[in-house]
Amino acid sequence: MAEPGTRAAEAAADRGWRLRHLPVLVIASVLLAAVAAVAGGLARGADGALGAAAGVAVTAASYTLTTVVLAWADARDPQLVLPFGLGLYIAKMTLLAGVMVLVGATGWAGLIPFCLGIAAGVLVWTGVHIWWLATVHARRVHT
Image (cartoon, rainbow, N blue to C red; front, side, top):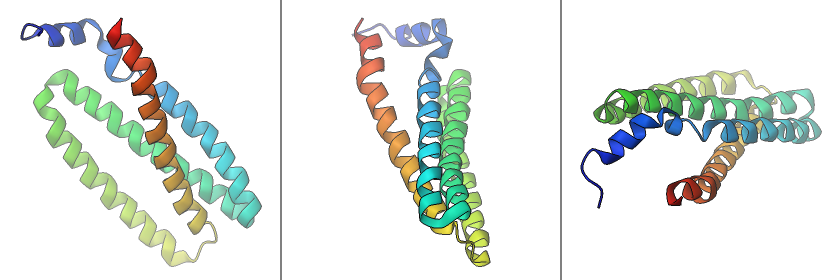
């Protein structure tokens, strides 16, 4: 077992660990947005392409914002992670619900591809994050 404070000292020495996974996840989201735009375009034309790509972009922006804010909070004081995380979650879900209600009221043809883009973005972000933790991060921890 490590001495108390050892992990904190190691984390302080390696400031980039909190955001190290972010570039891989953003690249995966950009690639998914391109694929989603093509699929949405084939299914529903320009509105479908825009909707699907925007759905992926909303998910990626949301997760990126969460990652950056929580990394900042953890770097300041680990006790800030919970209040910042909960506050950000409530703000993001409220904003997303408002956007979905407003867009849904317009009858826009890209709404369904938008929703599917969000779902695909969540699945890909989560899957790539699990892959990163199980392979890349696991190798760093064990060496």
